[in-house]
Length: 299
View (cartoon, one colour):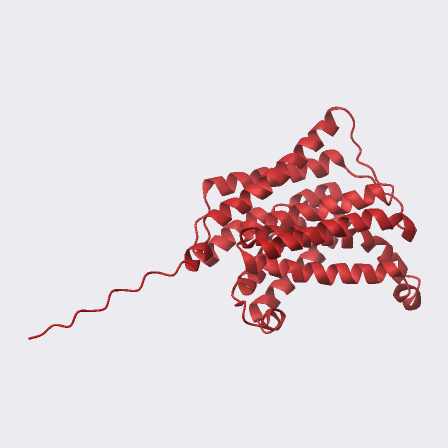
């Protein structure tokens, strides 16, 4: 078996594990009532832990795939996790995946793959001064905060907004991961003494929490697309503004990348709206009328 074949198989297996992990975490989070301790309930859920293990296995497979193949080969294949998650979620909840949902999800995956393949972001510097991070990172965190505010104020947009916030923070962790990994090679004191390390830890922990809140608020079609899109977009924005990365496009390629971004945003919102319009929670929010009292019969 060639190295490319190994990379493809590992990437697809990683995408499948992402789907399994997402479905397990979403069903666990959705089962937590608002009156219960959210984090405590998740930590006591074996299904949720199984989802976390699925995410861990996916990460290992991604690393193996990247050993045998390039980022441009592996990353677009990971987008297939959304297409794997749809039938798994449908089987778990008993809800049918509509043709419109399949078309929107397919368009989203295709647009994201085109963005990664055509844009082909270049590598930049691994580190930058704190002053250079201040404005771009502050802007990204402001977007995250705004999404959280929208989620808290609008129940119908809660899953989408929490998904956006979590995806953006995962993008922040992606932007810091390489530098923090390199710091670990220079010893624990230097690793623990770096502000980038603690920023990564804080962003990652908050992203995991917001992801679970997104899963609690609605189905995967409402939250997973936002997570899938938010991470690479936020990482690339920080890479271009802070780390000196750039998209290797010009002319028609730049137009194609811009169109792909528009398609990603439109399909993400459309998937969330489709879910919000047909969610069982909406129906459950309206109590069924009580049956009329039975009229006693006299013999």
